[in-house]
Amino acid sequence: MSQPLIELRNIYKIYQMGEEEVRANDGISLTICRGEFVAIVGKSGSGKSTLMNIIGALDVPSSGEYFLGGEDVSDMEDDELAGIRNKMIGFIFQQYNLLPKLNLLENVELPLLYAGVPAQERRERALASLERVGLKEKWKNMPSQLSGGQQQRVSIARALAGSPSLILADEPTGALDSKTSRDVLNFLTQLNEEGNTIVMITHDSSIAMEAKRVVRIHDGRINFDGDVNDYAAIL
Ligand SMILES: Nc1ncnc2c1ncn2[C@@H]1O[C@H](COP(=O)(O)OP(=O)(O)OP(=O)(O)O)[C@@H](O)[C@H]1O
Ligand SMILES: [Mg+2]
Image 1 (cartoon, rainbow, N blue to C red):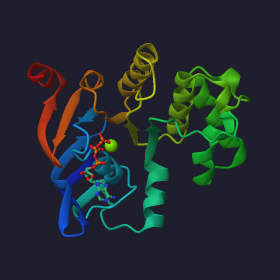
Image 2 (image 1 turned 180 degrees about the vertical axis):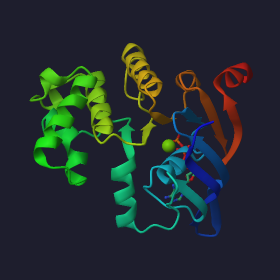
Image 3 (image 1 turned 90 degrees about the horizontal axis):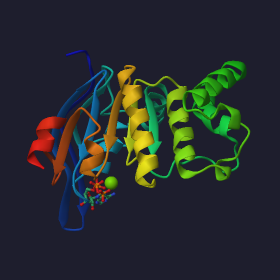
């Protein structure tokens, strides 16, 4: 296979709750290569969000090593983590996380602004990104003027604007009806076919079927990692 993009080695995330230890991630090792489309599945409380926060450089593990694009992320300070996030990761959240007082163009421009991209280039890249998701004409609109599916497309445009190495989606269809979910999933599949690496967190096995590889977490550990067809066979 191609180059590893994500390398997690023996990742533990342990929370001390009074006397009790919660092992939210309990020894996770996982390699994801460039160009993959991976779904991370598991029941509520299994440790998906904990793992997503680590993969997304939003949090660091209690112990273990994490390399993202060859860089050691495990021990980074907050400002370094922010830099890595900005440079390498496009986030898609269940609730879109668009800023209500900014129009669509400004929303999509935001990560580019943080990355220090000059104004003219920012605008061009944001418009091109909105065009990708079919919403260029609406650039002046406010998020509240769009449907849920359209808002999620704007958030995808925002994720794409910085040309990230990794697209990290947390329950991207969680707030959408089934038809709109299908559109969003088709779009993610298309982005993957164009070479983008996608990691999608979901508790829904039918959504996971859209990926090529499925990693299932149970009690903070991986208990299945394989081809989506093998996953389907055991459901
Ligand atoms: N900040 C925290 N402090 C203490 N315990 C935590 C913390 N964050 C998560 N946990 C615990 O770690 C375990 C894994 O939580 P996590 O949020 O990763 O689950 P999840 O798989 O994302 O669940 P869901 O599908 O409900 O979102 C749970 O038992 C949770 O209670
Ligand atoms: Mg979660």
